[in-house]
Length: 299
Image (tube, rainbow, N blue to C red; front, top):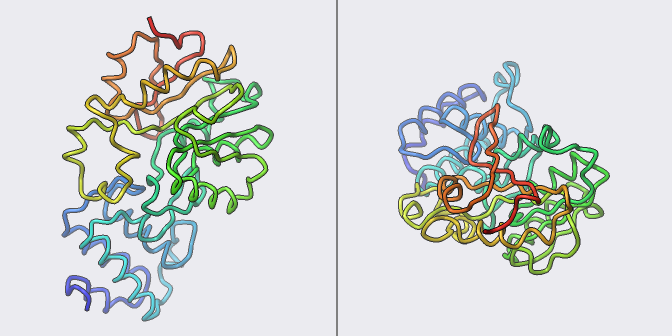
């Protein structure tokens, strides 16, 4: 039934042995890492966390724990999907971490991996005075991880999150309920700003930004993610341009827009005559720009 490549797992008696052998198996395959882990070792530990129902990396004592036949079989099932289907691990486990919190994910939404998490953990300092934030809008919320993490970081603010996909809205609402934030976070089905009203101190977005040419060469793992959440036209600017154009009426005088442009960053810089501030991240990541409401205009 199972691919013989995974029979190595049958000899494992502890989590430590399982960690070692899973890493051996994954290292032999041509897999792409970038959906929450960076290499076979990290991915193997993430699988262990899932199998042991732990929210933290297993320590030395936990790794010595004996494993059951059921854990062995579950490990082989996970490896089978990861290796033979090139399915990203979070879609197999239905869990991903963002800002240190666990979120439900499936193939209806992108897997959380944005460097925006560092901005949230820093409460947007020094770019915004945390005490000046009263209302936040996230465009293209997907799983809801950014909007919900902001709400948890700022318990006294209002957060509105939109997405055009009804499927994504369902996932975002599921996560909103799981995190107990229904009273603070409003999830709206909307094509960008279409169904949005009022003013916001911060508009934040990780929109589709992958240019057509790059879409053709993405690793197989990306084929499991929603095409509409990635593809953004010839230059990767189809949605970024609309957001920049339509945002001003929804910003307070001192408001800002934070926008992740990823691989379209250079095209965005060249395509718009605006004084973007490109944010440097201490823990990795790039391609995130900030622009103040007063500078958000087209010539």
